[in-house]
Image 1 (cartoon, helix red, strand yellow):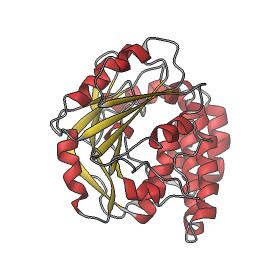
Image 2: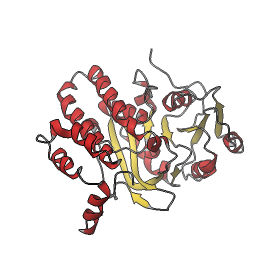
Image 3: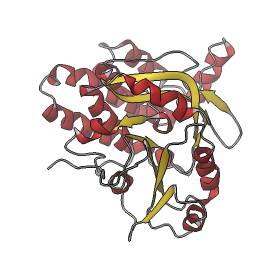
Image 4: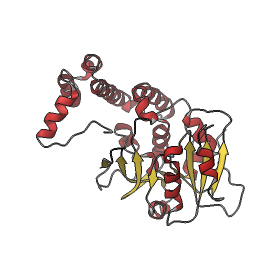
Length: 316
């Protein structure tokens, strides 16, 4: 049975903004305030408290009725918690803002009109990644990324940033499941790629969100789990999409190369070389990575930056 979003009430907001929170008091008010500052007025917040033990509930409840507060009885995986929030959504469009990220005031005003093409199921924008040291990195550098049919592009180089994404309700309802609760790190990636299989994407090239990079985030704390989750996703797609098998080996190769790169970054060059060895004569990136992995990554990046490439490890 397909999941269904709540459409019972009339006079519903156009956009439902999904906020999932677990002990997010540190940045929460800044995140919520960035929604209330939107120049586009027709929205609601679905706030799902994943059994927080800090003051997150008090902060969320201090806002008006446009923020609808829900609390789970126990802490559950993020994908499952996002599904709980989605069940309460009323809007024609679904947006996402985690409690440590920020929206620019014109985000909804600039992105919602891009859904005028009824074949567009997902709209995204440029984003700034920032950290506690106030280092900023504009993700796309103002360049227009893939628009239209982007399924294969996303498979080979996933480029969507969660706080920028808005999804058409109809695109979600077309899926047999929403966020796969098996995943802790790639639950949104896996869903959005599935949507891209059937729907077109569109992009606003302006910076409309800020994504906070910090060591407390789950994506940093469990970064080594990406490898296993990506392989599970690959097997899942192979069963879902009849034309997927042609891409299987290419994507598997990319996952193993990414895994080797991560191992090198954590100073395990020996294991990186073991993983990448089967691919080193079939892929230029694998070939280069094999040899640089004999040296600490900090030395390699320092040399590259000295010669003017200005490269940082991914995610800085």
